[in-house]
Amino acid sequence: MADESLFDFLHMEIVSHIYREQQSSKEEMDNKDRAVCVSVLESMGFRVGQGLIERLTRDSPSFKDELDVMKFVCKDFWTKVFKRQIDNLRTNHQGTYVLQDNTFSLLTQLSNGKQYLDQAPKYLAFSCGIVRGALSNLGLDSVVTAEVSVMPSCKFQVVVQKL
Amino acid sequence: MDRCQFVCYSIGDVSSERERQARMRTALQRGPERGRKQEKKMTVHNLYIFDRNGSCLFYNEWNRKKQAGISKEEEFKLMYGMLFSIRSFVSKMSPLDMKDGFLSFQTSKYRLHYYETPSGLRFVMNTDLSVPNGRDTLQSIYSNLYVEYIVKNPVCVLGHSLDSELFSSRLDSFIRGLPFYSPRAA
Image 1 (cartoon, chains in turn cyan, blue):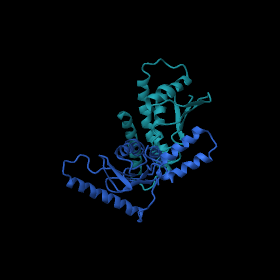
Image 2 (cartoon, each protein chain N blue to C red; image 1 turned 180 degrees about the vertical axis):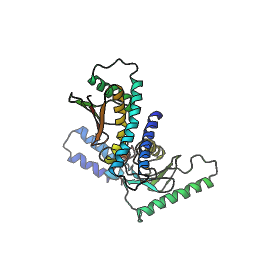
Image 3 (cartoon, rainbow over the protein chains, first blue to last red; image 1 turned 45 degrees about the horizontal axis):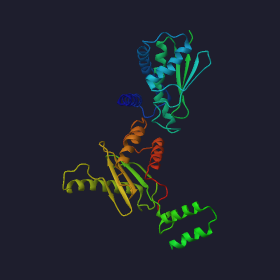
Image 4 (cartoon, rainbow over the protein chains, first blue to last red; image 1 turned 90 degrees about the vertical axis):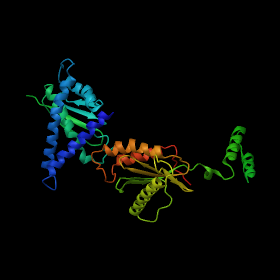
């Protein structure tokens, strides 16, 4: 049980460290600074996701198609990393997927509704990077964004880039 | 007085014999005073959470009939100062080696329970006299609510007052769900 808290606390501190660093020179953070912080977190997550997926798929056979890959991400990958499965996967069969998680593990301690909604994106950037890294190592270049309307439920949108 | 009461029931009553007898039984159980005043008054009055520096992080009340007559800030300072003094008093005057130190005090109307965590957080709960030991309750508030919803909340800075609505609502439902809580207190 201690293992789960280790990552949660480390993640909290990573986010606040990066925001503190960015803010150290100025008084107020403007949107550009916030974007820098989010992209730093996302690229950290990217590398982590790449490594994780290598480890998690070393025993499984190769995937038939894109949809299969997404299903793997929704079930096995999400279970290993976020301790539960994705609740809802939607796609337009043309490269866009929406993954909905109704109790996202990094948001459950924050709030149960609208409080702290503006702070939520900070804590989702790393996870978006993890998903993007995982997909890229499975051969799918993508752009991953996340949105939250009511905590702790959130939606990850994956747009697969075609060459 | 009593006898008059249940004679009235049996005369005015048109329902079955069994029901009449059930009514007589409950009238007897109620004792000399009528109805509600005799029901058990078990309740939690209020709860304070202080940090190690003495600042009050959280306060909520459920069943408080009388206010202290001073501002909230002064009340918190008074509470913390009193606890500090009592704890050092208890440890100095103890005739034996002390294990846990100060646990609770009681008056003829209420009992105050105290729990201090190793990290210096102090939980204080006022309940009525029917609750003998609130320490376990306070400890489970600490481990199941405080640690889960405040310490693990990235937005809550340690040392500041606890703003998280999630924490307040979970604490509220926890207190209301306690076996010794009832919303009607005399």
